Length: 324
Image (cartoon, rainbow, N blue to C red; front, side, top):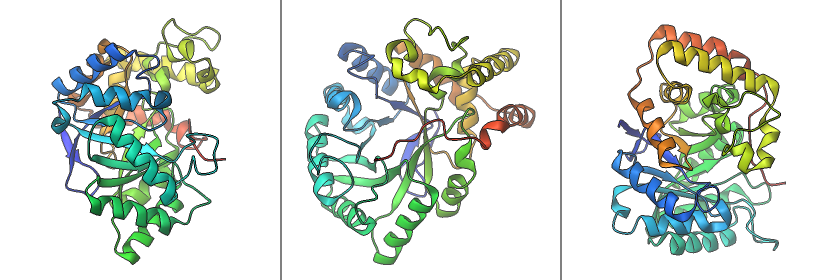
């Protein structure tokens, strides 16, 4: 396993991280616990969750699975998306963030999180309020580093400017949909992050499984796939994406790699990427992705992947989560 700095911070994270939004849902508690333990044993140190994942079950399961092993991981969670129907049950106000952090710490059975992330930009809360609240959390010792998620480039840079002006802790990372099937961050966000020393943590690095090559049709989802277990996911499927997944599979086979490992390796070769979070509903899925960290892409292979995915530099994001 390779380790790299999270943005310009001094904290090191594994090149491959574990995403946990299926824990307590598509993966039951026992399976989720086995996946976490296998991840740690494989050298994965970065575990990412959120207060909304499977209605808080993801955090609860992680808290139990990490008993006695908390010190072995960099634990990240998020807040900001809708948690309930009340007027203060979403967003990044001081009120909401302080309440959600305490709840997350309780479920995770820890007194600190290594990375606390704002799940999406909140247009109703002044950025200064959000950043001062986060700074207070860092100074209290309950949070070590702070990050953003689903921020547009201008929103991220504005936040960084406020932090610099006020002498506050700044975002060290940001999460965004980024993959061979979604290169839209390269238009503005990637250059901004490279300039400002912010690490990108891609989510949907396999486009929800499309880049594994298992989808051969938009009409029939493979048994056990995300589209099979979560029918709403079919909104991401179209003929173009399915065809792209098949082309990628052919290239991967020629190179002697699985399409998923090749896709993850391409992301890991992007200088702006700090860690790539991949979900799993079975231990075997996790172990199949670990080899991606040892794949070295030569210039010819990178060029082929860049050319194949070039159309996705100019399209709409594969996914983005915002407050309405």
